[in-house]
Image 1 (cartoon, rainbow, N blue to C red):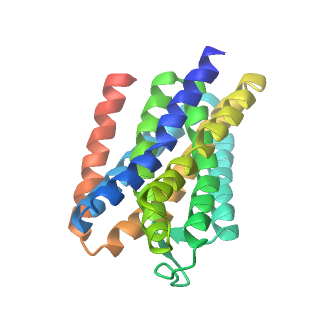
Image 2 (spheres, helix red, strand yellow):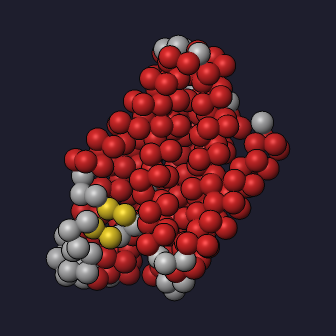
Image 3 (cartoon, helix red, strand yellow):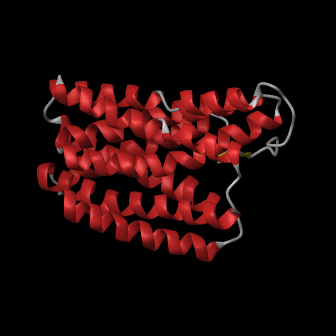
Length: 247
């Protein structure tokens, strides 16, 4: 029970970082340079963590076949979710409607990101169930990633007519799907012990796809590629430090 509560709290903190992103952008919109750096930071953390920790642990526990299967399953699941939902890259919708004044648009973004956060919660829960320190590191990575997502909700919500407080609440509540995903993964791991290595590889697949398909392209759209690169380097170093101290 303690393990479940701890995993839920970690994923809740990571998920509610969307609210922090919404609050930041409503108080003062960060510069594009800072946004590029922060997105790069999240990308560096998630890539290094996925390949040097999650995948390695899965390989050690179960070998190549199960690890590769879990990684592909995680990637395909998040790809499928992106294909079904409106494809949102931090507030820029592919059909160009980001600046329209449809009142429901901000809500659609919040719902899309909330559903997107569910498999992220699985990543946190799977990692924590295997090793609490690893779960903490994954939660930090997800929290960094969720801040720009909160901004993606708040900006168009304001443009579509929401008050500042309503836009903030949308961003905040969209993160609540993350602990739900964590709960599912922890319960599965508790019942099926053999799910642990698969869950670790599954989490890695989710994180790598999000990084390559969403975070890095969105960061480069800001027009400050060098700041994105600096962020990736900083995120990679931060991950090495976290892994060194926590694991």
